[in-house]
Image 1 (tube, helix red, strand yellow):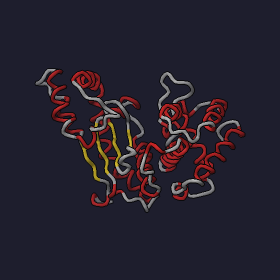
Image 2 (cartoon, one colour; image 1 turned 30 degrees about the vertical axis):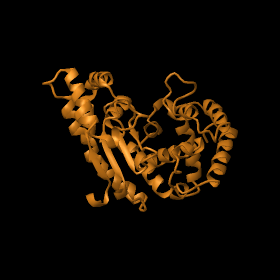
Image 3 (cartoon, helix red, strand yellow; image 1 turned 90 degrees about the vertical axis):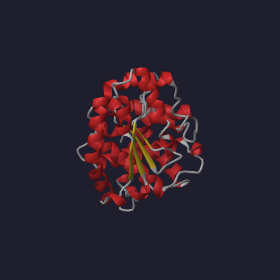
Image 4 (spheres, one colour; image 1 turned 135 degrees about the vertical axis):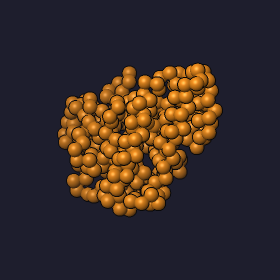
Amino acid sequence: MSAESGPEIIDLIPQAMQVLTGRRLNEAGRATRFLESFIAANPQVYQRPQLWQFNQKTALDYIEKVRDYETAIEDLHRRFQREEPLVLDKFCRAFPDFAPARTRIYLMLSLFRFDAKVPSDHPDSLLLGLDGLARFHGSNPPLAVMLSHEFFHLYHFQVNPLPRNPDEIPLYRLLWQEGLAVYVSRQLNPGASLADALLDPKLATESPGTLTDEAKRLLRCLDSQDDEVAAHFLAKGEGGTGPGRVGYLIGYDIVARLAAKKPVSNLARLRDPGLRFTFRRELNQLIQAGGMM
């Protein structure tokens, strides 16, 4: 695939690392430079108050913590440059109607807020936080699997656009989106384990009984648009009840069973009312089966 037909890649890592590793300044000086020469210089990414609140203290704290991950960030940066063209080529062969030239990839620092994210207000853009990747998944995460997952989100939002108001997305659609992406990432990387696709070894071995309980809980709040309810099913399980990110596993199970009968490209185009009906039906079947089928 030529550069002209691929995504626009905005690489902020060299600029960020130059600021972070500049040893001529003390930490306070680097924090000021980080805020003024990097954060303020890239408002298209960092002007998101729902994600970040910047001040001298947060910058100092980050600079101190990120020091442990600088080598891993640089390694991931090199890996992305090697692996992304191969992953994209394989993805486009599987989904020839994907238009990567209409997308952007930002190689960036998320300040440990996330590993990868397609913002609902810019569903044509992938924010790839290399510091988050290094911190949450170690120095050697399954990058090809993760890129396949995120490419599917970009593709999905092309063929099945989000509503104008992203706050109106019901919970079942969020889990459906993630289930599709997890399934595709595993299909395109045959050597990947379920733990790789879920990015969570513990979740991949969750007991059927736990999944049944969580599926019953989900059935009661399918239409919820509440952030706390969504976090229970989609966020990491730090101090919450139940396994973290369990919605990814439930969504994956539902998609895997449906994909045995229909092409994923068709499933990606499923919209309401058919989507809700299908998701609820499959969720009930999962509950009746006592866990993953």
